[in-house]
Amino acid sequence: MTTEFKLDFNGKRIWMYWPGTKACQFKENVEKGFMACGLPDGREVGDLNEIMSVRGGLRAALNEAYDYGRIAGGEKLLREFANVMKEGDFVIARSDFDYIVGIGIVTGDYYYDESRSDFRHCREVEWISTERLPFLDEFKTGGKWHRVTNIDMPLRKIAEQLIIAICEGKDDGM
Image 1 (cartoon, rainbow, N blue to C red):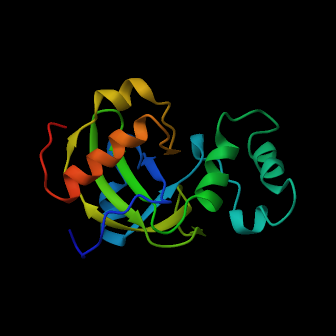
Image 2: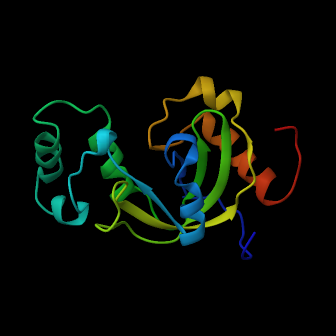
Image 3: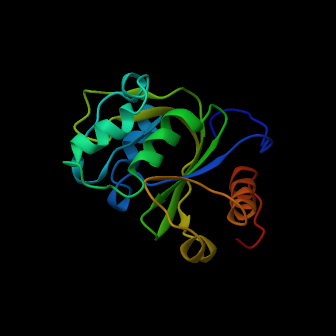
């Protein structure tokens, strides 16, 4: 743990985050204190702050990026990453469906980093644990995980227990 903090889940969301195949981007995420997401196949829509300032802008940008084909979950992913995720929310980073590689707390607003080759949609994160643990069976069978997914009930309680166990150093059989 890098700083003192109080585990308070009141009004906070918990997000499952996939930093690329086999968590290939996680080392950079930790070193630079951020998380990043993007669309499949390296498709790009641009800065969400600009795009979503226009009614229907995100849908239009996705339609153009995918030649008017449908991308499952793309609009929801980007909208939630930019507008629903908030400072203080928790992040559980996973390496595919094999391991949990870290726990973090969102510390900044959405920003677009054009200098990145992909995964240009970013948020600052303080990674409070980079302990590698097996991906929980309950998560494997209970969720449809995308690049960034809000964890809802009943998996939210399991996620809270996991964060508490890791961050407070308790071993409660997880």
